Amino acid sequence: MEYVVVRFPGSRPVKIDGEFNGRTGELIELEAGTYTISLGAPPNFTPESQQVVLKGTSALNPKEVVFDEV
Image 1: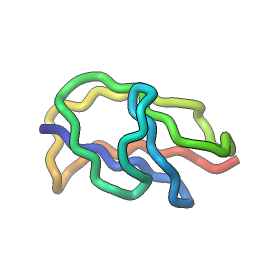
Image 2: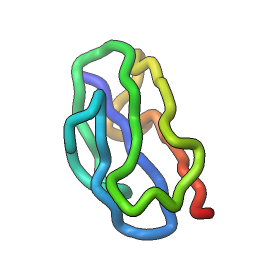
Image 3: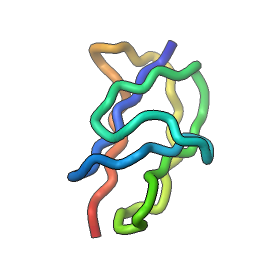
Image 4: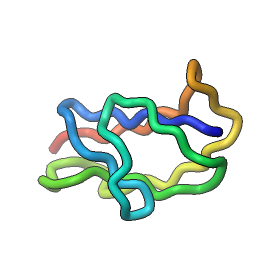
């Protein structure tokens, strides 16, 4: 399993490949692979989405994906 944490200044639903899967700040567990990550509404964040490759992560060292508020 691979792990990702999505960061944003507020709590927001996380969309992975178009499906909601967890919230910002939470450890999300996924299979190894390439994913498109975005946030739920409202669209006051940048970038619109990010493509990430999850490989070689752990629960103690997850991939961090950061969105900024605009």
